[in-house]
Image 1 (cartoon, helix red, strand yellow):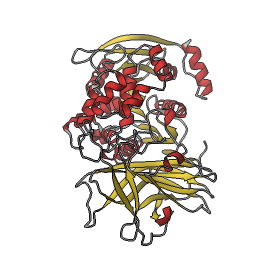
Image 2 (cartoon, rainbow, N blue to C red):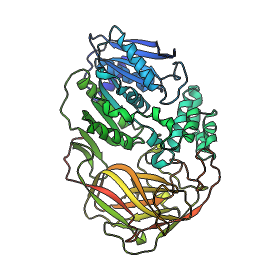
Image 3 (cartoon, rainbow, N blue to C red):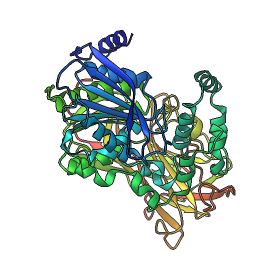
Image 4 (cartoon, one colour):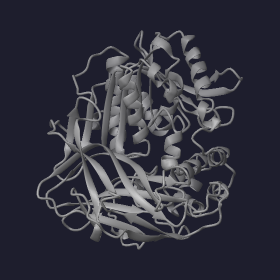
Length: 551
């Protein structure tokens, strides 16, 4: 059956023909690591002498899509070793995210070296957490590591967890619920999904957050509790759990695949920049995908197998540009680039009175006011979320109709505007509360008036974090997700400014209470200033004339 499925998938994805169909599979191999824990491991062995190895370490089980990937990769001429991380799917010990991945990875590599089929070379392949485990091992794998395929992942999770120094509540709690759901019977899980996951919905709305994991899963989740407590950027807790401090030591060629609406995209592009500065050989693909898009899966298999063919097996492939990105919007498409970010001209689009947006400086004008109430938090809508069905670009008109959301809209464009690169905003805010969030979102308003989110970002403001002028105004710098988008003629640019995006980000209670225990909610007014002394604006990278690639 596996052989038939891989034939169908190979044809459907237009993959090169298999080098062999004769694959021997050994399941549930016990691999003992340094503290005596047994990690359950599957081995897919092709009947090809001297074949190199691909290692996939995962907390999501060795069946389903991972099993399919294992066989597809083995048919391309690689030994494939798929291992369940400790505490998952038969492996011993307790799963503690990021804690054991370095040591367990190194011990698994030592086990590989002792196998009679070991050729002395290996690569790694995987998405999301399967990518974190690659970075945990990569700097210490020496010359035996020949290739990495890192899909929607990053070497450091801390900045994604606390984006803008807020807390990525939806991502973290949804992931905790997903991990716990792996331990319940399949039918029970399907019933919960059919009901719309009401326990998770209640948990996302609950305070204090320290009780949310039990509401969502029925149990206390240790890492969720720890991530609520260890919130500050300098927390010792995070130092052994992020692997970016050694990323410049990685010499293996790296293929990165991500999406414009992926939760880890900013961190993954930071990895790209550091590896590029260190002289690593890289391939970067960013497409019109979310964290769980089917298109992302297809692209990662194609790109990943080609990368392993070339850099692990030594089978040269077609010459490709180092960077390939998909430009969204009407008239967009794929672009081949020599590097990321490409050359661009930063253009400031200023917030104007009358809720207008333009490239001219704003005139003198009174500020706009909104009332933010954390008891009725501004909701998040689409964007980079863990669950693909709720993520991505959606019509924002429902949230833009709320009184706690300000929108600034340009005139209809006479000519296309293509923006490719990093995006930032500067918002001048005066608030009666010292603790607040500033959420900024860029949208593309089409000819029918639908407002489609393109990118966004949030920053948490607390006393002393940003300078305050004598009149109480704080200039808040907001880093948004990067962008590759073409605003078509007749479309308009729109910038949203609000006090939050819940439950994607934990609501700001307005009190400064600790993240996990806060229950008191304070509402208050805030003013968004846009005048010559307070030039609130979003800065967009206007692309240089592109070179068009094939889809």
